[in-house]
Amino acid sequence: MKRTRSEWLFLIELCKTNLSSAMEYRASFISQVVGMIINDGIYFVFWLLFFDRFKVVRGWGMSDMVLLFSIITTGYGLAFVGFGNAMNLANVIAQGRLDYYLALPRDVLLHVLASRSILSAWGDLTFGLMAFLFTGRFSPIEIVLWLMASVCSAAVLVSSFSIFGCLSFWLGNASQLAIQANNAILTLAMYPRDIFEGAVRFIMLTIIPAAFVGAIPLDIVRRLDWKALLGLIAYAIGITFLMRLVFYTGLRRYESGSAINVNV
Image (cartoon, rainbow, N blue to C red; front, side, top):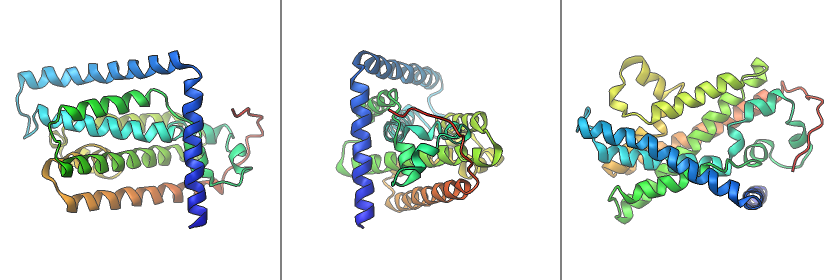
């Protein structure tokens, strides 16, 4: 328990440090946040136009897409504001930059993932909160379900991105493969699940866990399904443990990059 508390305090300090670093260049920080809000908004307009023409697609309407976007963007924001290096883990491993973290008396995986924050993710988080205001789901139960579903979505994103990044332990440099897999998760998550069938739906529930990022959290909030929420929480915990297993198994194969890196 003492070690766990220490790691949590360390994580909080890392988050404070990342935020302080961002505030040193406020103009850049604000421009990235605003730019991401605009980017999310442009993508959202596509669905506004689509559902203006086709009111319902296999039971999905515009209100469902608003809720879906609020969950995904909030989850994405939470994930990469706190654990930005999950996106870059493949490069960190391939370039031998784990040496710095291995020399310190901290949990290596936690330190690696939390040592970087994606500034634009603050824009996603802001957009997600704004989108939720348009869902009209303001009862205490709906707010709690939405928040917990978003947190689970964030956990699945960090874990799945990290697992694909860990492929660099075995493939040498899996950065491009990780990027393609990560993009596939986000792209599939932003579409109504019911338009996919057969092999694609199976992949979304297994190899590319896009359904656990968007559609399943959406169903939980839409149906007020507490049992399904427990299942999602169990899945999020499970994939987090899988991430740690894959990372520390791969770490046994890691060879120093013999590189001198400056870490600020």
